[in-house]
Image (tube, rainbow, N blue to C red):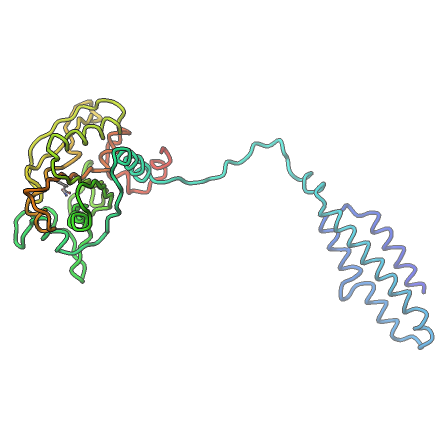
Length: 328
Ligand code: PHE
């Protein structure tokens, strides 16, 4: 009896003197309700009593135990109350900006360029990342052993597929599955076995374009490309067009834009190779070149973005340097 009364007293004063902290609460739990706590201690004495004493003391001990449990539970509520949490937060401190990433500048500009072509009535078709000899060379008028293959002959997988060296690898499929007149663009990632420098990279992006109808012309091709670059750069960027050779176009041309170097010197940068689709390419897809005409191009997306932002080295895109990427 004495022990129980003394315990009640200490418990009441403990509860009064608590500072509502969670450590204090833990200590009280251990002290009273723990395995070796005060209440279990009393119970171990209780079992030694005579049955008639047990009848009297059993309920009293139980009531005390319940009181302790409720008191500690209430205390816990208080400790966890929002008042306490709020007090521990200094709402006058400046917030921390969450660190959320964003899409790569190439991806951003790919979408931007796609939208320009969408307004011109083109639809977007995805490219592949590996393809076979047939689509990569054969159907593009590169017969086996043709010397021009060397320019695109890059890596081969063990299954005789190659990571595409240009998005033109989709041309035959598009010609086979679309009825003229049609216009599509095909953005894709390309790979080349080549020495890198400030304007050449082994992995880069192209946006292929194709337009086939009965009466299109070279003038229309140039018109589309000019409209695109003026819309993309939002001003009349100086450009020139010169003839060049690709086995799958006739005539072939390339559009170059003026590129200011760090030194202030101006240089022409090849931005869009293009041309009128070669009659053999149309024929291989079952289209009569006497009835149908088409043009195609491939924009060098990385270079397009370089010129927009004045980036002096194409290799910056794939270095993964956050100081570079976070600027976009
Ligand atoms: N596929 C060519 C290249 O990557 C570019 C090109 C596309 C040329 C379409 C003409 C027409 O070099």
